[in-house]
View (tube, rainbow, N blue to C red):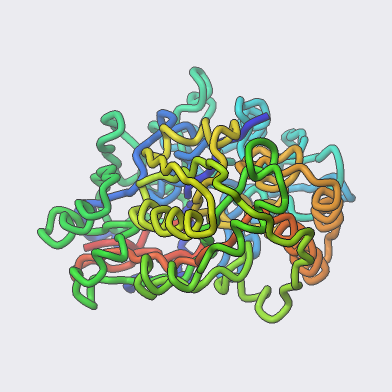
Length: 492
């Protein structure tokens, strides 16, 4: 089953907002109506703001949706709609709910939560956070009991995913409609196609009244236009400012954040020239990652070291050296199609540099660039020989093993590399079954080495994200996991 890529955030509760870099502020502002925030986002809705696909992060970054848990600054599960939880046995967890209200005025009850999560398990395509996972949810007093088909030691982390929000029963009368049915501090009231959205403050939010009275969001795929709108005062916040535009912003408005995002070259290991492991090795040898980090990203990135970047601090010094399976073969003019998307402005330029490097090695390269929503299905179906992807490795669940399972295993729902390798699947399965955090991380790095050894993925750079923030704005949530942006304390 193919599953949509989540591009990018779960709103953290007020007690968690301090975990990420912000421009100040407590969340109490009951004495003032506050100003509206004008926010420019890089990715327009691709699926009518369905919470189960790539639009899930749009909803969480705008403070609309939230789930049972969130992520803290260390990547651990933290309370959200669930106040606490405990593991009853290997396959069963009990999550005790806090008192909260949906934006349509109905109460967040265990029955409503169970119905919401059950709906997510039945979605087509399924949320990436549920890749390879089967679970059943039932109400139990003031709690919900979740039982998985097999032991899942990271279930609390999994439930922090932006793609597993809790919506009111009204939302599921026709699909999963987040307009006026979520639980976050801002209520989505109007959506103007793929151009803009209007949000108003939800005064009954369990975590306290937001300081801003609402949000006027614009979806601006052109990064230069986003940066320009910030400079001219049309926006208060502009996400993902292109590195080429960074110098046009003042130091006070340019916020740089190390993230868990890695940009990689994915090679189709199932069909076409890169089915040959020797040609994958030739492509890997042709790539100069330092040229990309210094040139294309102008120093706002580090050369690719692995699937996990330097923001994943526990991987530092523990990464295992991959065992290469083959030496480089002779491309001998092999024709390949290299694709990427332009929502992240650096990617087309990076792909152009890669095209030159691969051609120098003997490949004949056709470059194809589209907007992401027009490209994703073809990428997932393996229609390209090579693909440049910027992927936040901890976005879907916060679990380092989850991205390996979804992106590089035979049954993975986001396997653009079309990789299906028994050694890789076993290494990932070993990591998935481990409950101890330190041991799980070690096994994740062992699986990473197996994956890199296939040559199906070439880590290019680990990017630092630039967010444009107007001088008068405070409390923006600069999140390395890219799940948050606007919270209760964000104001101007």
